[in-house]
Length: 65
Image 1 (cartoon, rainbow, N blue to C red):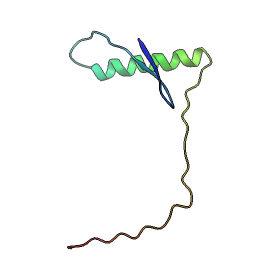
Image 2: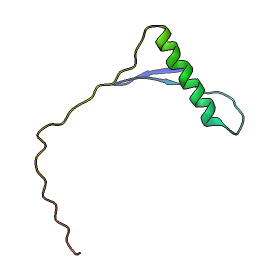
Image 3: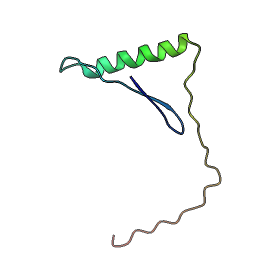
């Protein structure tokens, strides 16, 4: 497993060998186990959110129609 710190996340990456079908189900199961492990360790997953307020009014003109 590889870890990478970004400005907002801890990114986890791994490679695994699997059959050629149902890959989405396997990735889902792995993700759920990782989240469950975080929960059991008392860690939470969070993201910063930015609220845009007082956005200026935009005038849009479509030409040629």
